[in-house]
Image (cartoon, rainbow over all chains, first blue to last red):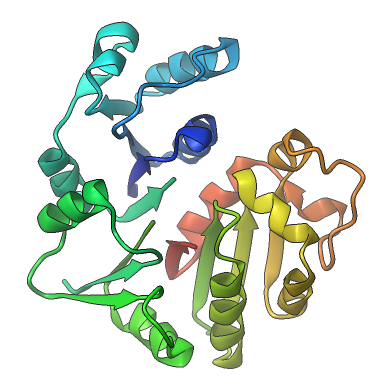
Length: 95
Length: 56
Length: 102
């Protein structure tokens, strides 16, 4: 099983990154999604539902933005932690 | 294990900090934004490396 | 057996990189597969996109294509079977010897 780190820095691609994370999870990969710097810009029904699906599929989601931790249940992370996760991953997908 | 880091654009503050933590000593870095790129060499480097990370 | 390279394209900023890398890799008999998703689907309408045709297998995320208002537009080298879901990208990750984002 491949370990995949999805790094999301582009606000406009937050939903796209979530879809890519789910696609990889469905192929039995181990996926951690890291939303960096920005709060989720559009927590609409589609993002919310797919985020729940990611949780159900045992995907992991982290953020270094405190609002994402407080409002949406992302696990807190530092950039140092993300760097370590990148080293431990087989595949890194930046958005 | 050797990792090839490809930088597509000049790193901003976040990317720079990530690179500080993610780049290991036995790594190679190729910058695509800094002038002429030898694409044949890049292909060789991609397959010579054990792992490839293409940053923003 | 030929080596394979999977390229995920997520941005609409790096078409030159995609074309140059695909040309160089296919010139070395590498089996290249390119998946366009998100904003990168806009690149399918650019002139240089045609240079990718015949140099690798090209796939386009159907959801992204429609979300970016391109439904009904033709894409050189991409038939209806190559308009795919994110599952194809995940398969590329599994299948290819090397996989990277451009």
